[in-house]
Image (cartoon, rainbow, N blue to C red; front, side):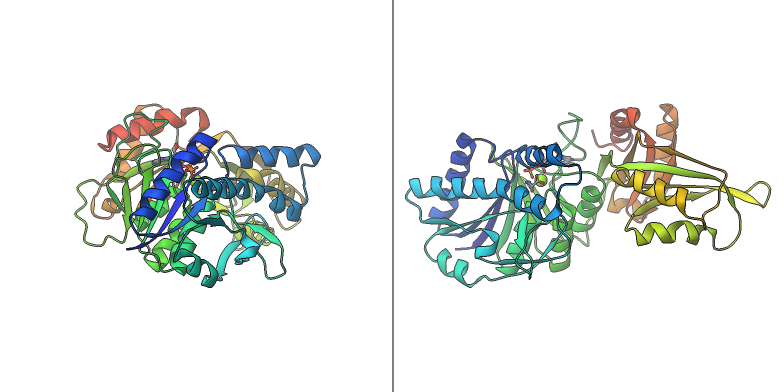
Length: 402
Ligand code: ADP
Ligand code: ASP
Ligand code: MG
């Protein structure tokens, strides 16, 4: 008998038929004698629909009310699933975040779970299945909070940690983590097992199959995860701490995202303190700068600085740069039709030539690199958005992932 956390994503609970199918999976686990806690997302598309509704009222919709609104999607699916289990003669109950409570800290839309009262649910698990809506919690002031898009994954991992669960299974619409998005690149290959570090890089860089903060928590507390399909019985992907793995490939996966924008300041003075003057007000405005390139100045007097930020921060960033008297430059340009393509692999550490191979591959396909950033196990480039899928496909082939 094990204590299991099962998380079902939006597509898995997207219709009543699918919720009934999920109830069958849960019943099987319960009948096998396991203690089961289920975390559910909202029906696929629901959260986006609710965001659209709020935007019809205001582009700057009240943040408190937005969290009240968005958390409703998961309330619907948790009640429907509990009801479906009760119909199958299984004792089941849904709890809303404030009924447990699931305590969060941080800002609206981006809070994080810090604690949870596990006693009543633990007691209930003796006889029944507990259903918990993902993506939400309550602040110490009693406000409803959401924890970031895709946040039901983070709810599942937090629950696995707090309940000291034996396993945490992420049921979704693909049967595991692939070398790249299998819905976009059909040649993508399923990865049988992957380390936390690699999964964290992949999800941070755009592979939305797992939410990055969920992977981070799993890594910190060493909670093994399994990503598997709600719709097939195929074996999924195991995510865990792998240290002595024999990496036969330098690259494990290719990820991409279209969330960035690039800004270039032309003709910036080339002297100490200038970069600090530029990035200080951005930091104060909580604008995250990702990649930075500073050109060598040809005249020793002025230089150009290029950097990338989240696309949603573009207007705010430009305003700061245009209005701050300490930031002096000749011209400012921006490009928000860019994408970030990343190769990720723990094997990169011990394989020389990966950087060259990536750049050569892109060049041979006439894809221009606009910015670069690296870490020990990843290499990211910014390119024109129109080349995204072509670049992913080519890199996937070049690094033997097809
Ligand atoms: P859920 O609603 O179950 O949380 P998501 O839509 O958040 O599901 O994540 C699953 C999707 O992630 C897949 O349908 C797939 O298109 C996408 N995806 C992106 N990169 C990958 C990858 N490397 N492996 C598997 N799926 C990926
Ligand atoms: N429903 C939320 C979202 O769409 C949370 C989740 O699905 O994990 O972001
Ligand atoms: Mg998800």
